[in-house]
Each structure stands twice: as structure tokens, then as C-alpha cells.
Image (cartoon, rainbow, N blue to C red):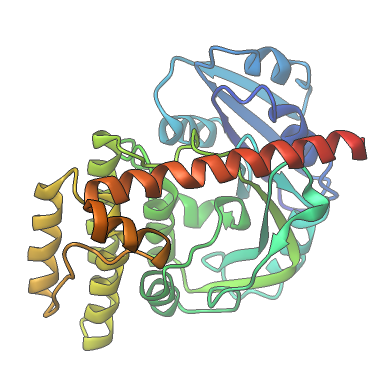
Length: 334
């Protein structure tokens, strides 16, 4: 009998997307699958829409709002699969995504191999998704994967992974303290328990750019800033636990510098902690953090706070325009 794959979907106020996401999960060509949706106290029609898909192989669970990490933990607790496919409520899987990765399972020497896939960004039209390879799009050891992520500022989207139940249980539950980057921290722990990643280029994930209301957007939220810095400290600890070397310390300092604009100038206490951490790593952070040419002139003429505000506001305006256009073109395609 082929292994059972559990496709686990946490959902919160995703009424616009949940139907398409469920269709992509149910439509997987891998036959032995179960789909579990955990509605995390949505205040819109997400739960009602999801319940329309309930069947023998599609379970809908509801709970009071506790956050995405808690919803994921709940979904895993009621799952039965030999392999776990995480899927956010606005993203899509190519029909053969799971099947292509499961075909590679037989070639892996152990259930501790972590399977990844290609992924591309889109808004409303998945056929226009932009797939941009990074240094993580290959087979890597856990150490080299984390070095690539932290040293080059790249990542793998949550749904790219296919994880054995053995490896999932070894990694432990999602961290409910993290309001953002919970997936980044979680998969660090999965990597630490793995024997490396196996990249399946033919398998594909479509990552919807849902805008500035998404979980990963920090903005000026102090709680999200604190959660982000906690995740960064954990990342550094995980990497250093595998190797203590000059290249590891340099990657950690670069990681801190890359994320520093998230905290400056609103949370100077976190900036000081980051500087102290960089010093223990033998490095030094550039404060104020440098801005791209688009905002540097604002900083020089009007100061960092106004430049930071422009850095937050201008992408919002640009994204809203592009989103409206893509939505209109999507309706024309339909």
C-alpha cells in the first residue's frame, strides 16, 4: 500500500482563496491522501466555504483564534499521514506536486530526507507565476542549506516541503510564540533533525502574494518585531549548533544586518541587542542601516523616520496598483 499523505491547511479569513486552495489539494494526482483544514476562528465565510468540500477524505476542524502556528499544530494532531504537506490557505499546488516528490521517496535512503520543490510568486493568475531559482534549489546538507538561507537572504516557501511523519515528530511542534516567521524557525528545526534536503525541480508550488495583511508582513507592529527578533536569535543558535566557524559567524552577522531595517528606528532596544549579538560573533552592524537608492535621498534630506515611512508606504501603493491590474486581467481570462 502506498504511503498516506496528509495535506494540512491552517485558515484564517481566507474566504477569497480557500476554495481554490482546497481544489488544488483535492486534485493532487497522488491518490492516497487526506486533506485537513483548521479554521482558526475566521470572522468571514472561510469556514462555511471550506465545509462545502467536506468528505471522507476532507476534514474541516474549527477552533477559537489562536494563531497560525496553533492551527498547524492542531491539524497535525488529527492527521494520520505517513508524509506531511503543509499548505497555506491562499497558495496552490501543481496537480502532480505531491506525486513527483513521493516518486523520489523510494530513492531516498531514509525517512529523514527532507523533500523540497520549485516555487513561484503570483497574485491572481497562477499561470503567470514567476519561478526564480536560488542557491537553495538543489540537494544540500542541513548546514549548507542554513548557510545559504542566512548568508544570502533567501528562503523556501512553506508548501515546497514534503516531510515524513518521523521527521515531523522529531522536529517538535510549531512555536506559538512567533507571530511571524514561524515557518522559518520551524523548518530550521526540521532541517536539524534531517539528513539533508532533496530538491525535486519538476514539483511546483504557487505562492500567492496576498499583500500587506499577510502573516509575514511586519510593518510597524511591535509584537511582530519582537517575534521576528526571537526567530532570528533561534536561527543563529541553530546554525551555530552545527558548526562554529568564521563562515558561520559571518553568515550570522550578515543575517542580522539584512533584517536590521525591520527594527530601526522604532525599536532601538532590539537594535542594541542585535549589535551586541553581532559583537559576540566578531562582527559589527552598520547603524543606521543603509537604504537603497530609492529611499537614501529621503534619509539624507529628511531623516531616517520619514525614509522608513516611505519605505513602508510606497511599496503598498505600487502593490495595490499591480494587484488591481492583475485582478482585472484575471477576470478577463475567466
